[in-house]
Image (cartoon, rainbow, N blue to C red; front, side):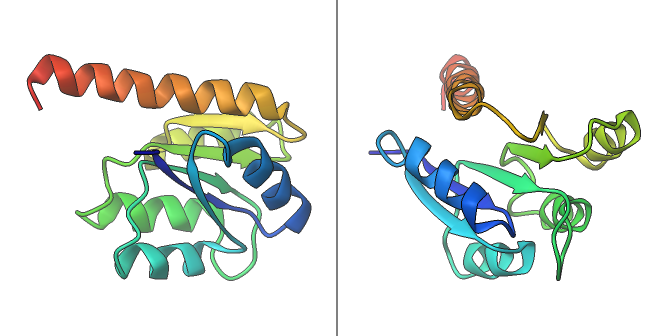
Length: 132
C-alpha cells in the first residue's frame, strides 16, 4: 500500500510539479490552501506526510502548522514546509511551531522526493524498533 501525502500550495504549477513527481510512488492529494487540507483531514483523509507552502491565502503555513500540531490527532504527521524566502527567521518560526523540514523554492523535485522518502523511511525504522 502506498503512503499518502498531502501537498498544499496556492500555486497550481507547484501542485502540478509535486503531483507528477510523487504519483508513481505515493497516493498524493493536493490542495490550494491549508483550510481545504484541514477539512479533508478532519473528514478522514489522514496523510503519512504533509508538504505545505508558507505564503498562502486563507490560512498561511504558520497557521496550518499550529492547527495541525495542536489538533491532538495529526500532531505526529511529518510536515515539510516550502518557502520562497531563504529567511532564517521564517525557518526558525516553522521549526518552533513543529515543522520537520524547510525547503526553499524553487526546489529540485527529485530532492523533495528524496527528502520525503528519507523522512518516511526513518519513521518506519523507528516504528519497527519500537515494535509497532
